Image 1 (cartoon, rainbow, N blue to C red):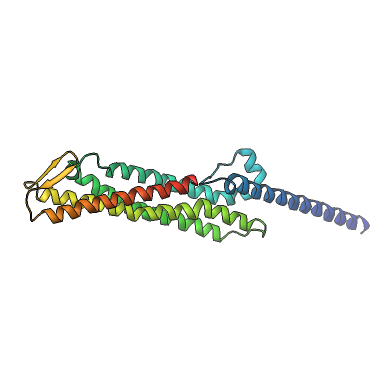
Image 2 (image 1 turned 90 degrees about the vertical axis):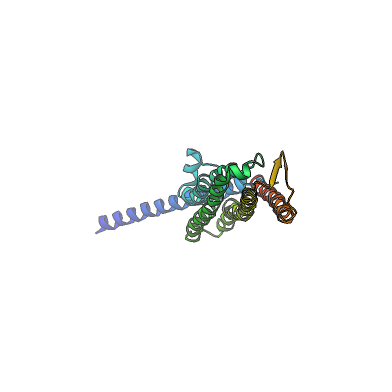
Length: 234
């Protein structure tokens, strides 16, 4: 009996020691995670989503999986939204007024792409928000993580979403003017950057379409500047 009791006490001490080590490891990992979020994201301007080195991942322990919520969103935003949006904008860029008619299909395709990108942002954000909401975090970590999440997930998602209406409206203005020119091509001439008509009945509508395109182009430029400010922190 004495031997059994001694063995039980020894096992209890060993278990307590293991629990103490685990507790100390968690505290160190949590501190390392808080420091990482603060110094590598929050203390820097703009959007920063650094990838963990193997040594950093080891120091963070299980918290590396929590940080993956942010990096997974960033990767998805880049591959599913940012790069395709740039491709759509390149497709929808007007290099000459003649292209308003000759590249009509490109502008329609670019506009359809914008709608798909809007849905992609919503999908990426919904997945990240669900994973974020499911986290169980200590009180000292939660506010720091929430701030980093807002900086690297919520804010860029909103910035992209805010750009899409302007892009859609701009492409719509391009398509409208192109279709009008095509319908009345026998009465409209394009000389360099000048579109004009000698038909008084067409002049008001043509002028309105040209003004709308100029207005939407300016809106797109400002939207791009806002997006760049979010990314760069300027």
